[in-house]
Length: 325
Image (cartoon, rainbow, N blue to C red; front, side, top):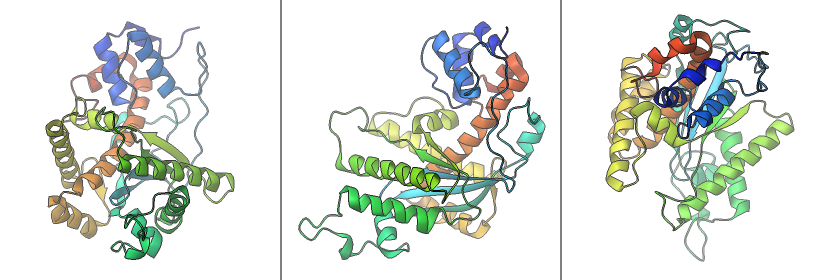
């Protein structure tokens, strides 16, 4: 029995790579590997050699509330996006959504901020780190599971989950264990990795207890960078800085022209795009925005693959993962 994605076998390797980038799928490997990756990403619950429809995600009558988190301790950034329930995360076979319709539904920025997790945890507000948060023997911020469990719980219950509307999808930037492929593991890498693990544990507990219902999804930063600016994230300092500048420029352009995202809290976002946008820390805010918007586009592009079949290649090829110039 033919599968709705059998046409992928007729694609060339470069075409499969373009589809993979446009849908947030791993884009490296042989043709069979790429076909498998794309198929599993688009039809995650569909058994192989089956044409049955996948089980649709839970509906959200009040719309989709997407919280995108760029990880950090002193510079954790988040971008809160909202989409109406008509956007949908269902397959065309269950709720048809045309390309024209999907492109007209633009995410809105509800909240966009950068915080220091340790100060927010201790003070319940965004202020400077106090001496009370420092280990009196080492004069450094405490680094132990108990402290970071408290940070994660406070961050979620005081700052993130109270956001309105309540997040239905939380995207967390996936962390690396080493920086730029080096053999040394930096202390701040360990700190952020621990906070990442604590966030997952806390969110799992909240879901299991019924205190919050939603989806938690890891997002690899390399896929986001390739989607918006193309190529790989550079390993040298010069290449990393160039990629960072390009991503910040893309974020400013997207917000400025309003084609990909609408600004609901105009004054606050204009402040970030203005004075703060000139500072060195705007890259964290830019990353949180681009991560959230990339995920929205990936979900839309998965629908395009199902709706258009081979014709989808005209949408993706030569556009850096589906990004329209």
